[in-house]
Length: 508
Ligand code: JFZ
View 1 (cartoon, rainbow, N blue to C red):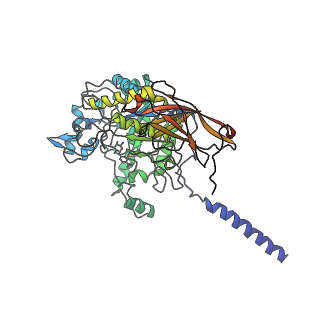
View 2: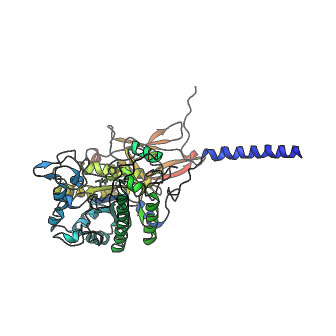
View 3: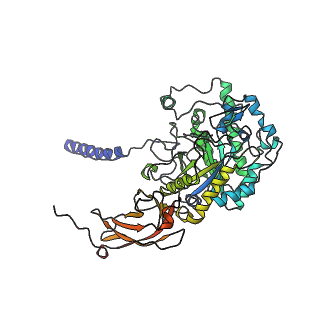
């Protein structure tokens, strides 16, 4: 009997130690408010999002009136943050709306321009940090309804873009400097603040009980406004949140998580990125287990990942300014380098080669005009996209490894080689990987320059020990000095290795 107990005990300890070793490997932190899904969303709404390729962002609000300048002084900071620039009094800023009268605003013209640029979706600022609402919200007086202009701008945008077939997403700032209940608890992105928050030693952002209660009013207000936006503009596809790094918001992770569920319930298919909420430990974008919070990764702000691996296989977008860091209208664009259509097209292709969407920001002026520089940019990009858009829309990363001449994207058996760094000898060397199927290799069947429609010559470029083949594609004269990136569409196929022959192993 005793023997039995001993052996049973032994068995138990062996089994449990094996199990423990297994669970230890991928021990997960139990989270109530982390990611609610592992891996990508698979529904049709998200599939559509994935295929956009290119989008437009518009930052527009009362900050467009000063445009980064006041009383002869120019702010080097972001124009949409002008209220905190120190160049204008808070009181003056908070009264700017009384002169907001963008009589030149023409939503249809903006939508047409975006369509000509090749944008498939757009994101519009309904409310930035200053709290001014571009729609007639019934929950505050600080809205477009109380300006000389009066008309609902969000509605005009949603209607005009939707009519052009461009999906609309609404930007909404969690930070609202105009609301008496809004409190900032600091930025959770700061390592010291995050550590204190996780240790429970963080300062309470609410100094008094009354402040804490007022923040409850702010939460109700925020929730009401979000439901109001979904009620007013049911055509929209998603919400683009900002300012959720604020510790006061982070402390409400459970409430925010529930709010997200409520919004999704109200609006089936709603797309929300990783900038809406954090997990209960204050982790943003990725939760404590490294899983993506909500539908796509929003951490790439004015910044592209360097490799597909870096994106961890998440859906993602990159939002990009034309100057260095100006989202709202700034009168003086001489302060930093201004990106060219070439720069932006290259970034757009790069983003798509790593499975991300690329979004270009516009900042219209206080009268409702898109500045001439942005009009030129839209035109330049549009011309390129009209010819080469196939390489950007509805594609994903290709089976080719990243190569020095540019980026590649793929759709079915078609691979788009987008060349932005032309080799000095005008011969493009393309490396095709080894097939994963035993006895099979990938070969390029045919290749076409998509802007001219001309067939490319494909010469043998040798092979290497790893089983990869190289192709040499001569670059025709018309592409040698065009000053533009160009695209070659190649068709790839798997064939038995006998058809290609094997690499001659060196005798060593
Ligand atoms: C925010 C806003 O403050 C800014 O005005 C603009 O609207 C932009 C799109 O979003 O700016 C950010 C947001 C996030 C980071 C930096 C600036 N970030 O995560 O590094």
